[in-house]
Image (cartoon, rainbow, N blue to C red; front, side):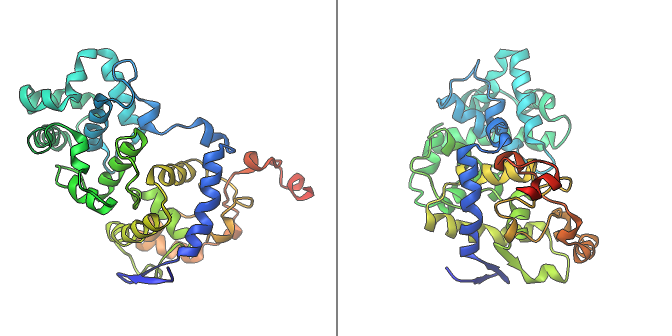
Length: 321
């Protein structure tokens, strides 16, 4: 599709194809060490001693853990603490069984359990959502998570179904679809926008896949940016049959591990599209926009991909290549 204006923003389809092509190739091939070694939190801390992979219990684990996947919550920490809680008391598996939660557990009991995972952060809200969502799943969907997606032809359809659950917005709904694709609950994939978080939004903006003219002049709320980006990638991923369960991990791991202020990006396969490293704060704060205006790639804040390309870390040695 050509440039298309949506809410004052523009999407560059050809650039997106050029950017995602090498990204997905590197992710699939495992040529970069942290693509090979760094697993996603829901995989790294999966309680395999208590739950069988790709089972109904696995679906329930992800369905309820999604409630905790909110801003300011570190995904690694949340999944790790949930695993540790099960290891310390295997009987707590009942808290990940929606039928048991709905019929026998009180919000106070859930609150005591979740305190060990999240502390006081949104504890009341999380506990109520845990109970409400378990009841809704049982009453409206016969306790079967697969029934949520019945009749959903697109990711947008499925997202509308998921956001009726307490505490689930567009981002978490997309994340849930991604998780359920990974464990083969959703086959074939519902091609659509990945969960748009800090990592993905920053990557889309600095590579020029998405342009928002207003950002050059004034502060914009981050949630407004997300609302602009989701329709672009819904259309893009549907058209090119790109599964969010493949695209999102590649971008998320890339942004977290390599696209940082301390690294070098001179050899990054998408460097020619990139306007230079900067934080997401640059887009949503007055101070950030002022700083962004003074920033350029001359600061040598670049990606570190020398291990993938077999290049020396020393710049003089690299130039000889």
